[in-house]
Image (cartoon, rainbow, N blue to C red; front, side):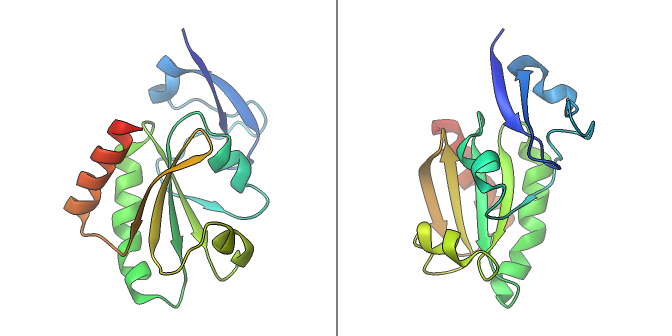
Amino acid sequence: MTTITLACAHCSTFNRIPRERLADKPSCGRCKLPVLSAKPVIANSGNFNNLVLKSSIPVVVDFWATWCAPCVQFAPTFEQAAARWEPRARFVKLETEAEQALAQRYAIRSIPTLMLFRDGKEIARQSGALPAQAFDQWLGQVIGSA
């Protein structure tokens, strides 16, 4: 039985979970809420490392901004993908205007930009919003190879 470490979607506390139990919707040992939420988690400078860089499962990050029309139009597609793909991957949204240092750290030049992280490293990047089918296809390629 392989145990993985995941930060809670609600309080960012690390939880050790048997990989085989991820689909059982495990609760956080601290806040008692689900560790995985089946919807995008809002990231900021305070929780980014725990949610993204220290995750034992792949993490898809949507770098976006409130003023960006394609970002706003893509949001429902990203949310629906989170519901379909968790627990195989976690989905995180990072608002680039509020978190400019993180956006700069990852050289975000256009938004939306989607990045897949695995074991703290960037594995794949996609600039621009994708239709739902194309996004699912991209996820299948990058998560399947991560």
